[in-house]
Image (cartoon, rainbow, N blue to C red; front, side, top):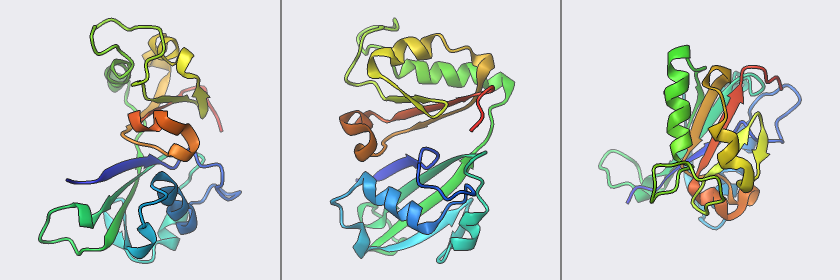
Length: 191
């Protein structure tokens, strides 16, 4: 079975003063997502905006972490049945999320609001559900008790970026990380 994990780097508090990304930050973040998985023994190969890098230091510096919403996906090739991937390798996929177009905002927001709905009903339930993802708006963690209500009243016209990741760091969010994370930046927000 393919082991696939999507991680947001945007929430890292350990970025350097210039908002540049480094390999040590990427590696630390990935390892925090699966602390007991033995990722150190694998060869790491970076794919940044679709281009392969063995030593990605210079390319990573080009990311403006203060003004871009970044993501990392990683795949352990040992968990993928393939004839073209080398075993014992960790593929690190890095890119940035585009700003939403006006016509996309309502649809994307509605997709994320659906993640906060009770599975037995099509109505948005305003109580805490253990299956809700983590919600972060403008780099602020929204409590599980307020997440449903907060996302339900959000106006699509105010949304600049929306990103959903399947899993996120257990070290940061505890057991709720298994349900993924919804990250939203609004138009008026500045870092």
